[in-house]
Length: 161
Image 1 (spheres, one colour):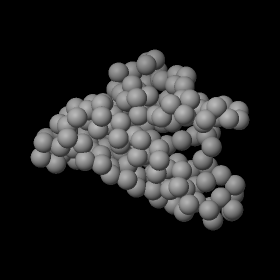
Image 2 (image 1 turned 120 degrees about the vertical axis):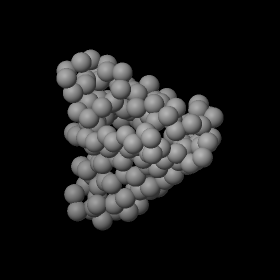
Image 3 (image 1 turned 45 degrees about the horizontal axis):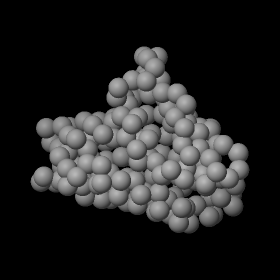
Image 4 (image 1 turned 90 degrees about the horizontal axis):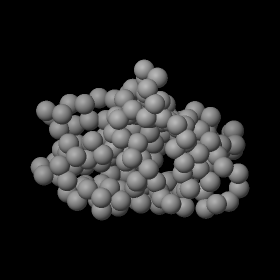
């Protein structure tokens, strides 16, 4: 298993950054257009369609067709963990991928208050497809992740600062 990590400091209040990332609209706003993302369905832990906040147990059915090439890839993302220590100025949530292009995907989103700013810290633990060959090549996954997360962090700053 390999790990990719990237941080950015956003000149915006912690509560605004956390709230933005806690909604499906935040995910949609931070996904580059070239991914051709479709959020097909969002179901909360109680079965509610389109819940306001992405809480533990929320399932997000998505599909993408990167660069418009090849067949559309579908997967389910599930919010596995969510912790809020709002008085301490920190929070996090974890999503995992099921049935998608990665045999293993665990994305931890951390948020820390830093004065008048917020640090957004993304960590992805993953395996590339392809069995043992994919596991061997997994450390090279950062080549594809870096442009995606650079975009996400730049958009976070542009939308919230």
